[in-house]
Each structure stands twice: as structure tokens, then as C-alpha cells.
Image: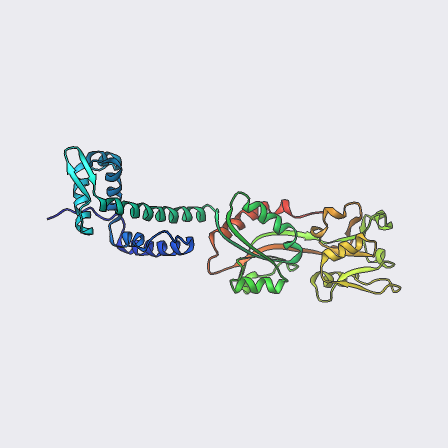
Length: 346
């Protein structure tokens, strides 16, 4: 019975690899790679092709045997089997070694290309495993998307040019909806309810940090003499507040911190960063997350804690199932250890 060089992988595994090859070729747009390159691995034993390459490079069966650590007779049997498979002679054999035929030289070019494709697939898999490649899709509250979330993402992908990033700003309901609809894999959001069961929304918390709002006012204001700010301290001030229905405004209203003095018309804005800009211009005072106070207003804006604290938790959430991409899991694990150093505190 003729001995054959056994395939090193089961047939179903090679079927999967063939699909990967085709997908890789499509995405790499290798216009100079012929379809024959793919067919080589679809119809030929990769082990035979490895031996063929060794014979081409070494010029003899004995040298090829040493190169890939098998016996010389196994090299000879493999080359004969490959010749029977392709239907033409690959080498002229003599006591001086193996001389490739013109057909063998043509085949060798395609074999090199095919191996390069496999190498590319392997490298892509390694990069995904080692968080060097993939797509990081995140939805964050506007204050976070423009603040600490973007800084965290920048540091995480530093040195990993293969990671694509999709970071969008959205309100709380939109963040949750985008996660559940698989538009993003991670949400950076907030909750005032310490006992909230995120599981009822199909979400799980991966990292959490407690936060407190502050009162901000123009530097030099008499409020600088206060250790903390109460509703009574703001009775003669013009309040700059978020639009009705926003979470921070609702919490401030519960503490009597949202009404301007009667002599002032109300000012409502859509973003906390706008409150900071107006306060820096001396228009009034506001209640904000300290995260939104940028270095650009240093010396223009002062802040104090609230006598009746407004607290919440900033959380990183993802869906419970199905599983999120490996790069997203890696980011969450990294963020759990680093989130504290990115959030501004007071």
C-alpha cells in the first residue's frame, strides 16, 4: 500500500481556513494574486507544499529533510505524491540533487503567495488576540465623549494602529438602545440609583466610579468665601441650567438649586460645557460635573462642593449577551484599572 504524507489538520478545519483565505484576499484587494493561489490550498495537502518549498530552496532531498526535520525517504515520497496530484513533473533527479522543471518554478511562485496569505491570516488573528486590531465601538454621554472617555480611548489605542474607533455622543436612553441593538459594544453613562439592576435592561456594569456635582461661578465672586454652596447662597444669583428634563437639572431642582433670583430671566442650555463657558464670561452660576471644566477656563472659574451633595455613578456598561468583540473586552478590563485617574475630581 502506498504511504501518503498525512494532512496535519482535519478536513473541516481546512474548509474553514479556505473561507478565511477568500475573505482575506477580498479585503486586502490583492489584485495581483491569482485565483489559482487559493485553489492550491483548497485541493493540495499543505504538508506536501511545505516539503515542495523546502526542496525548491535546498536543491536536494537530503538537504530538504534536514531543513524540515523529516527523513529523506519521506521527502521523496511526498514529492512523488505531489507530482501525481498536479499531473506534471516537478524535478529532474540526478546524483547531484533536484533540478526544478519550468512548471515547478511557476508553481513555486503561487505556493509562496498562498503561504503569504496564510501568514497574513495568522498575523491578523494574533493582532486581534493581543488587542492590536479590531473595532472599538463606544457610545458616551456628551460630557464624557468630549472628556475622559476620549482620553481613555486615546491612551488605550496608543501603539496599536490596527484598532479602529467609533466613539459617539448620546443621551442615556440612546446609549442603552445603541448597546442593545449592537450599534456599539460599550456605553459610558451614569446612574443616580445605587441599587439599579442593570440586568433588567440586558446590560452589565464593568466599571463604576462615584461622582459629585459642583457649583461653579466666576473667579472673584463672593461665593469664594463659602466652604460649600447651599440654596440660600444662590438666592441672589442668576442660574445657568440645563434644559428641563435633564438628569442633573432634576437633581438640582430637588435641592432648590435651579431657580434664578426673581430679577433675572432664566438661562437654559443644552450642554454642561456651555454652562462653563457662560460662567467664565461672568453671566451667572451653574451646577455641573467637574469633568466638563477644562483647563482653558483656569483662573476664570472657581468651584465649590454643594452643601446638599448631588451624587451619581459613572459606569461603563455592555450587553450581557451575545459576547462582545475581544478588543472591547480588553478595553473594559483595562478601563476598570485606569478609570479613576481619568475622571476629574474636586
